[in-house]
Amino acid sequence: MMAGKEYKSINKIEDYMFSPWKEPVLLDGTDGMQFSPDLQKDSKLKAFVNDLSRNCYFDFSHVDDRFLHLDTYIYNIEEALMLNKYDYPPNENFDVRVTGTTNMTSSLNAYAFAAKGHYYQMDPAVNASIPTIVDQNEEEIVPNSADDDTYLGVERYSGVCLIAMERIFFNMAIYGDDLFKDMGIPGDDGWFFPLSFVKRESVWTQDQVDDVFGALVTGQKVKWGLFSVLMILGLGFLALAVFCGFRSYKMHKELYPGKNFIFHVDVEDESLTPLDATGENEPTPRMGVSGNAAICTESSDSEFSKSRPLMQQEDRPFSLVGQGKPLPGTNSYDIGATKSSNATPVASAGILDDNKDDF
Image (cartoon, rainbow, N blue to C red; front, side, top):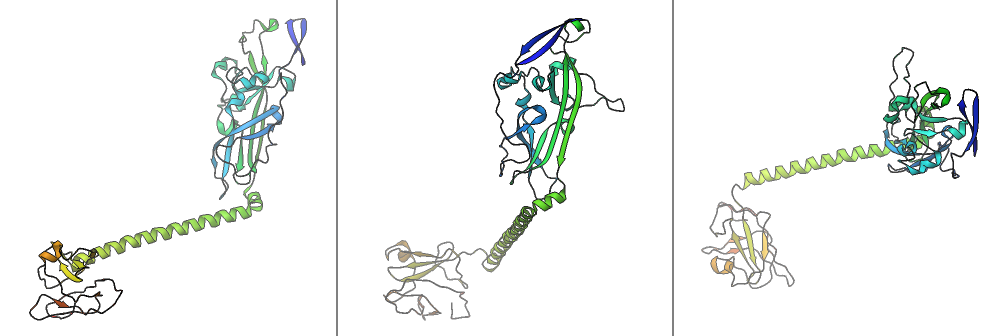
């Protein structure tokens, strides 16, 4: 409970009792210098702020890059902390009546409240209560986030606070009671009378960061260096693969324009049939094998053995190796087969030229 005084007339003051804090509030959070390590963007920071006499919570805003190779997360004081008690019921305990403020009556023993610097993010509904503040050049000061907001900059991995910006604007509220009834004071919110502007700032220097986080910075540099090297190597290998593939395709087209020969191996008859790309078994002065040579398991009654002359071979497992020579007066080839009890038919082919016996 707190005792208060109220003017009833120019010579009459009445005492009254009030309790702005109806429930005890336990401390929640740190002193603002150290937080949990390995912070995430959805993390909520908790700290007790002496100048506000209450627990404060901070939400992620953006990443600050002023310290090289370190991720400094910026957390702004949460918006709900300064919502009025009607929009944010937990503020009923602090008797917050105007959005953009927090009640300081119990701490300062007067009708006082704290706002952000120069009434930053104050509820527009109370514009009539806000005085005009000018600088030394008689120019009106326009509040902005960089100069008037309260926020923390915390190194992501260690949780150490590298940047602390506190901007708090203390005010008294003057209401139009019987003493000031003819002053034109707004009835609901009164006049806001600025008392002081508290501006506390703490920022680590680059030398301090290097001394404390030297090992971490070195690790970050090595990580990014390796990442860059791997990226360059990956792009180089990719370019080389594309070049080799195009080169191979171009050479194939130059050597065998319009041709795509296939070898058919009939396992049952153990015979070899050269086919051209159209499926016709016509003699050609040059014959090559493409990558789609296939080993088929068709029987001797299949369409291949019935409709096309076959390369004759003895009835035994064979392996095509070395060179073969045409047999005079026939369509058959002596392909130099070798005996093997467990051999698997394997075809190999070369280039057949009219002026050469080998293929």
